[in-house]
Image (cartoon, rainbow, N blue to C red; front, side, top):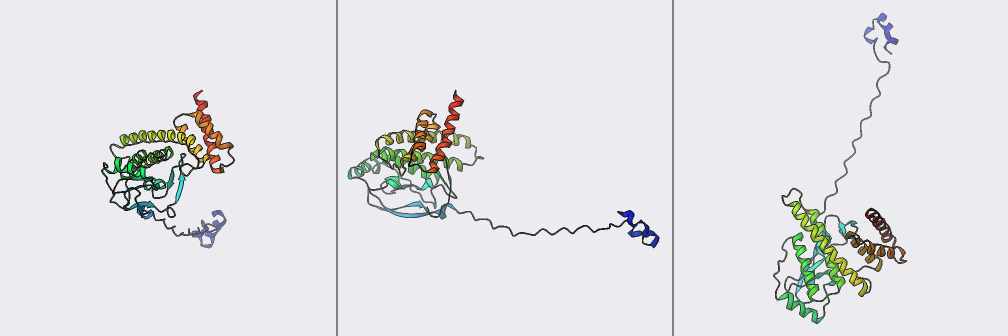
Length: 284
């Protein structure tokens, strides 16, 4: 392009002989978009509150930390229906424990009790137990696990239905899973802790499956708030975990042919059926 102006030298304008014909287009300035305000992380203590209860065993006025269900946002569920909430492990807050007599139970089973059950708890729990009430703003995993173990002991003592015992075992497994997720990998004993918790989680899940299988044949639905198809799906998931594929296949088939099963459960059942078929094919 500079050749077009080469003759300018004859006009005393030699400095312009190599000038560009066109200016470079001015690049538009990037608009500085305002940064989206980061959503403040909600703390666990903001998602719980102290709720008052009357203990059905010793009649004491007590309080227990309960999750604010309307405030905590559900992010999803594990395959075995364990809920995941933003900012809080809801499972930590489902056992109500009397700090006076030690009676403990999942919130749905806290009361009422029969006179005979009250006496069994008083004789076998209240007169013996050494309690460690929580004093912090939230429950630690250690504290929550202790509450679940006490709830299971009370369920055994008061001769609760198998479904209640199974549900405590299931939720204990969920709690252990959440605890594992909270562990710091940089801790020296991280691997040993995680391995021990995984073993305990499996033991609780296996016991839960046994309890639900018994309850399924002796109790009417809903069981632990679950309708027939939801319970069948849950049991199928647990059966797959322990490689009881024949049992799992029957349960999944029952869900898929059920007229009362909702689309969400049926979709999950189809995914589970595919996983079962893949596992069986691999074993052949």
